[in-house]
Image (cartoon, rainbow, N blue to C red):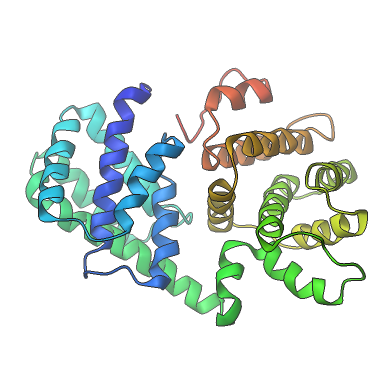
Length: 313
């Protein structure tokens, strides 16, 4: 399905139902909040306003009246096989947001697919979504608990690993960084995203480093020493799929459309610094563009590619 006017109502309604599933035990705990937002953020083809229309349902539990209407809407929207397939694809993306689908999650997805085909969706939809979302959230929270153990700085460590390191390094830095914490967090998110592109083909070219340094200096107005510090921190970490999803989501939430497009221009310059785009670089650029909600047609034009299977198509 390529018609976004047809797709978006499915995705928006599904997103709201997933939020309801997250409220299964009557509350969304603080440690679950970020994980759930990550899961929802991978829902495809949403504008900024549509994304907000889903997030508002995280503010307080849904009423039975709202739920009944949502289920009716969703059941109507997925009447055709193509629409049912698209709904399954969107749910699968939520489950696979961290790059891993466990056997339990796959079993739950298969069960949902079967129920969609058999038109028993109304009776079983909510319970199946609760199971799928709960399994996925539990898997991710377990991974996080095993990895991060400095609770005081956990929020920055999860959301913005470059800022987490910069806050420590800045204490012994030779010159003060004349930025608010909000500004520093935003430029650190941008630095991490730029580093991900430079690392795409597992070899960081000097020309790529030069482009990142120039962007940090000119666009983000860091001093030369400050740009070098952020650059060294950003390039010193390998960013997995889950890291990049969360980093992109937070950059999306603190930036405007012009800033996101400007950043993507820079990402293209980084990838093209050696004179050509490699396949891994294109994969990373297309993935990041999807996370930043940049139109696929814009990405294709900027990369000068006619045919490419984008995650957002």
